[in-house]
Length: 174
Image (cartoon, rainbow, N blue to C red; front, side, top):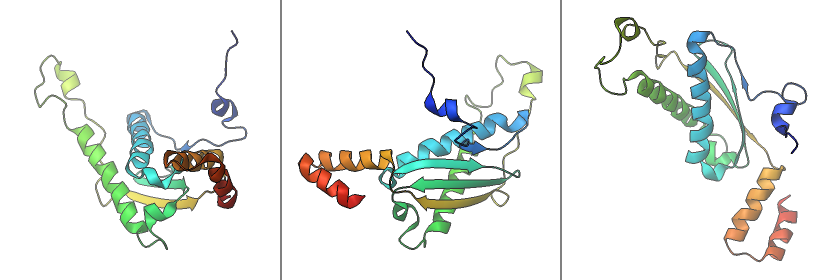
């Protein structure tokens, strides 16, 4: 059997950029990886009708996060003319702060049973204050790509629309 190479990993840095662009010290690295994973999983679950294509995350300064969302239907996220953009930014900020606070709480209460004094006294990375965290958000409409076409086909076939009619609608959709 041949060894298969993942096509995205094969092209990263050559023809396609990374989806996360930041550098962190050893102290904050795991925190940033968990935040990126959290955002990439919770946003498509919460807004599944928006049709997320990519979520790019960039951190240039501590406490600033820049998120670029490519979605098929950005109207669901920010409204028709972008009137809900600030509300969506605040919602993402609150999600990140709630996640950070939930990680700060001990899992099994405050008991240090089975831990030595040196491990119990180790400090966790400090939590960002609500007024210190700045979220910059860009929402971009993406229309013609393979996943949007597949989602369109799936959506209409699940509604029991005849497949020939779906292909006619697809030509109009493009």
